[in-house]
Image: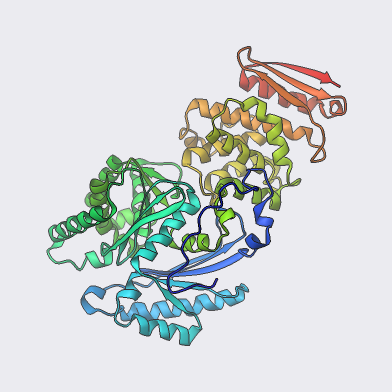
Length: 522
C-alpha cells in the first residue's frame, strides 16, 4: 500500500451503494477486495513488536499469522531519552525474522508502523535507518493523533457505525479518539502508558496526582463522552481477563467482552489485593505484561471516573486492524462484518454455496416479527448452517457451537455468539443437554435459548428440501395466535418429504408448541 508519512485519511461513506444488501453480490469476489487476500503489518510499540498477516478478503479479519515479541523498547526512555539497548537488539532481531517470514509467505511487502517509543527517543531515527539497512523494511513513524485514528479504525472494523470513545493504551502512551457514524472525530494523545508511569516520582500517590492532572486535560480536549468506552491494548485485555477470572465468566473470548464501572472497580481492588504471580498464572498472562497491569489499572479507574461511559467493551482490534481497514475499499468497509464473514465462510466451505439465502427465505415466515438485530443473526446462521459438514457426524453439533462462540468474528456480542452457537448446534442435534458447553447457555435467557432451538430445527428441516439452488421449494405459513404451523409443498417437492423430514418437522413443531399441517399445492 502506498503511504505518506501520515497514513491516508478515511474516505466518505459510499452511501446507497447498489451492492449494500446482505444477500447481494459477494464483495470479496471483486478484484479490489481480492487484492487484500494477504496483508502483512508490523506494529513496533513501546512494549512489544508484533507481526500480523491477515488472510482473505472477508469483512472480519482472518489471522493467517500472528506473532508478538516483548521487547520493551520504551523501558527507561523518560530518564535516558534513548531506546532501551537490550530492547533495541530484540526488536531488530524480531524485524529481521518477520521479514524472512514474509518472504516465505510470498508477501510483496510488510507495512511497518512505529509509535511512541520510536517517535520520542533521540535515537529513534537511527534505529529506523538501521532496520532499513539491515532488513530493507521502512518504518513509518506516526504521531499520537495518527495512532489514535488507526486504533479507532480498528474498532470500526468490528463495530461499524458505533458511537463512543476509543482508548488505546500502549507502553509509553495512551490515545483517545471519538467515533460516530463510521468516522473518527477528535483525537488526543498522552503519556499515560505504564512504562512511563512507573518512572513517575512519589510512588502511588505521585502517580495518582499525575494521572488525575493528565486526565483533566484529556477531558478538556475531548469533551463529554457518555457513550460506550472501547478499550484497545494488551494491558486492558489483561485486566479484562482478570475480570473474567474474578467473576468466573465462562466464555474466554476477549473481543466484545463487556464490563461495567462497578465491575472494573471491583477488579482493580482484586488486583491490588492479589498475589500478582498467582494471578498471572491463573489468568495466563505473561510476566512482562503482568508487571504493567497494576499501573494500567490505576489509569483505568481514573479514566472511568472522568468520562463516565454508559458501558465498557474490550476490542481485540486496534492499530493493526486499523491498518487493514485503511486499505479496504469503502464499499467493503460499509458491509456488516458478521454477514460478510459468514458469506465468505459459506463460499469457501459449504457444499452448496448460495443455499443459505434460499434457506433464509424458506424459514423467514417463522420469524417475521423478529427485530432487525435478531434477523441479522438468523441470516448469519443460514449462511453458516452447512460449513461444518466435514466434521465427524458425532461431533458436528459441538463443532458448530464451538466455531460460533470462539471464532474471530466481528460485530458479535457474547450473548449473540451463544445464540448463534445454539442455533447451529440444533441444526445437527435435537437436544443440547449433556454437552460440554452447558455453562455457556446461561449467557442468554430461556426465551432466547428456545428461539435459538427453533431456528436450528427450522434449518435442520429446511436442509432436507435441498435441491438445486433456484428450485421451487415448499413454503411455511405461521399463525402465531393459533399456534399453527402449515407447510405447503408443491407436487415436485412431495417426494423429498420422507420419514426423516417428517420427523424433523414434528420436532420443530414441538419446540414451537404448535399444531402442524402439511398441505400439497399446485
